[in-house]
Image (tube, rainbow, N blue to C red):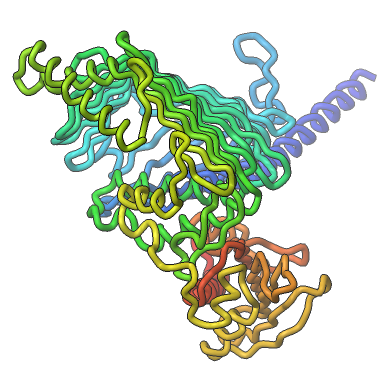
Length: 631
């Protein structure tokens, strides 16, 4: 009897251990899948905020029964100096259960997985990072829950990053976050003691930094929710400008969505401003927007980040903004206008002890076509405008006095000169009807009601106003091309929207055979012979076509034969690096490439030809990568 009982207990133990082992192996597989999805989601975010400058690559994943190890590299692809492979290597030790940490400190701690991550040494980090003795640059844990959510707690050690003449110092901090499955939502807090950037010409220091985010993935790729940062103290010492100090700086950004459009508001407050240790008061500002197309908003953010990152690199000034950037900006503007968006600026309030000044702008926009060159608009995009600028004369005189005194002038002399010059400027502004003086305040109002511009009640021509604006816009950002100039009937149609005949002409001129037909909705469809493009099927379809034989949108689509299973990593890698066309896997399991362009606002023949050529080039490159996926 006793032997039978012991045998039964032994069988039960074996059954439990076998079941636990099997469950652990299953959990390990699930964690690996979640990790791959997280890498794709992170790269999608990086492609928006740091385009062509950074990406995460899984270097190794060794899966075990009860534990696994993974190595991930953050490749800093945008660094100009490639003498050392610019990357940071993260090593993760993963314990998976289903109960990897059943008891932690005598308490119940059940998790799907427990992941400890550290920053490993690489030639780049050894050359670039300087750490306090016996400290890891990063050390932290991630707890993955049974529902796929994760809790992250990372400690950042004080460190110094030196690259050439640039030295970045980090005073250490803490990063805590709760993450939804596949980063579907994020709630995070980051605290940093300090952050500094020093070069041979500049010194920028931040003290007491806290950032937060609470957002979710929306219908479009724009994160929906709130985020912000507060900084206790900022000091800026830059060439050719006075020393600037900012205290109690707070910025918050909120965005929400309604279907395919988004609205948002940005608030920025500075509690105290000093210039060369003189009190320049405080600043509060609000900027809002309504009914912006989500995809166009994401493209605008991506372009902005790309230009900022380029300005921080060693690129020459002439290379900071290219002609392609300017054309892309205007294409984005054209894509934003169809939803009749609104923009609100203000109140922006600058307050000093001697007075305050403020600016408020409310503008409504309407659809306006692009010029055939792709740069500039064919008309006025404003539906309405209300602008009010209020300037305090004592405030401007005080600030101007501070600046004049820096030239070794006495305070009283600087004050007399400032009063004289400010008085002259205000009198000139009044004579030119730029502003009206009301006591010690100058007020300027600009209005547009859909028909006329009125500056302080006096009607002014749109040409005069546009000419004045043109004097402050850098050359190349607008076009002086007359809206009435047309190269051909096809070009005239393209100015209103985009005519399928323009694309058909381009295909003929480039030697591509095609068939003109209609899709299921009756819209024009061009079925293009793939030739040696590498695709098995090429189509160019048109959406939103009107009675004038022009259409609002163009969709270029390529399908590829499934000679072998589609490589998900190749798809993700393509989308990280390329913005021209989006890659994905169809329901049938075959790879596909799409480029969806909002054509309202017009597109000249040259711009359309460039678009088609870029897509066909992307098709060939994508086909080559499918056959030889990156390792």
